[in-house]
Each structure stands twice: as C-alpha cells, then as structure tokens.
Length: 112
Image (cartoon, rainbow, N blue to C red; front, side, top):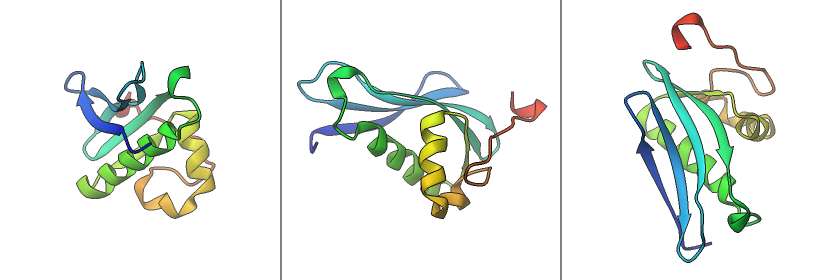
C-alpha cells in the first residue's frame, strides 16, 4: 500500500474531502466533511470502492484526517458510522472529537 497518495480537497467554502488514490487502481477512497463552525468539522461519509477493498484505505484516510485535526487545531463531529465506530475502539482520540467514544453526535442549529 505504499502507493496510496492522500490529499485534502475543498469542494467549496464549506465542504471537502480527504481522498486517497492508488496508482493503477480505478476509483478513489474518501472521507467527506463539512465545516460546521470555527474549529469544527463533521466527518460525514467514508467510501472506498471495490477496487480498493481490503487495502486499509479507510483506516489510512481516517489517520490522515486525525493528523490534520492535530496539526490545525480543529475538532471532529463523528457523523459517519465508520469514523464513529473506529473512534469507539480508540478512546485515546477523545481530544480530537466533539463527543465521547460511543456517544451519538448532535448538531446544534448553528452547525446545520
């Protein structure tokens, strides 16, 4: 999996994604996100195509997103079931999230 190239891409001022591409493999893995306010994003959806299944792409994308949160001082609302499930297995990530491990996130009116 040394040929996985990851990037953060903005779709517009509010939406973006963490994307992973592998040379010679069709498709892209992604974690989509929404900026929900100052210093807060939501991880909305994780998707990995069949062509990349079993290669650890989703986990690598999540690690990339967590590293970005650490480096840039923002917190993550874990809306995506995959992200929420991994966070539940790793409570040591608590400083990067807006909820406790296993807690279902809620968006305030200003975050919608």
